[in-house]
Length: 312
Image 1 (tube, rainbow, N blue to C red):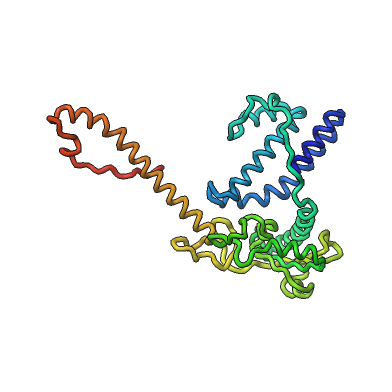
Image 2 (spheres, rainbow, N blue to C red):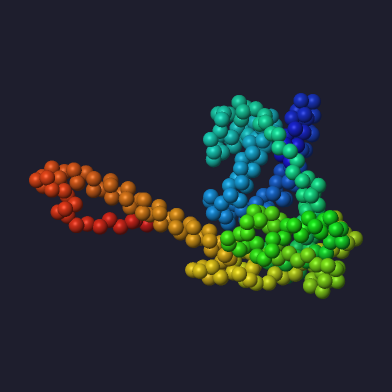
């Protein structure tokens, strides 16, 4: 999508249709980034371990999008584009956005029609979410369980392919699951149920919290109700497996594993810091004492213990 937008903006500038460039940039930032990608990506960025591939891949996408957007807005907002360029948290090939020029993007469209369908389903779900918020059934969208009946066979297969068997918060994840492409992440709901009839949606959800087919953009009959299970205090998803990870009573297995990994990293950092301080504090003393102890080492005459220091 960013390849398509940059090409449109570049063509608009070359033909002096600056309003087209402005409209394309604004539509991309609002519709594709703010309303969809950044909303869905929060879980990957905030919850995953720093080195988790699902987080690193998202950061890579954001880097590509940022640099492309800066090239697009530079002719319109030169000071802003330059200021952002000088403060990006990664090394750039050029000192100025105006030296960088247009970034070469040749990413092919990735299942464009499929993702358009998914986003239309998401729009229908958001209508139900808003109705549920208005009636105080839920607050955040993760408090909801979504029921979907899809009469279209092709779309149902698409939706089914994005529902991993079991919990999406399990750890370790199944080999066939990339921990990203799941309807619960895309719709920002704790549970998603694909049902076989509209009656099942009506039975599970209050009529006020459904989106009738007459108003549906996707052709699906969608409803929202309260999610089951307990709330993970870290990622806020509701799941029956919350509290099952050893040592962490109020988080899901995925968050428990991330917290455990972070704890181990901190312990390693504390040990490394202790060793560094030991060298800094005692190396000069070893040299001076050794020179006055008739060849005997400082360690042989002195008993001490340096404990790893905790970071503050």
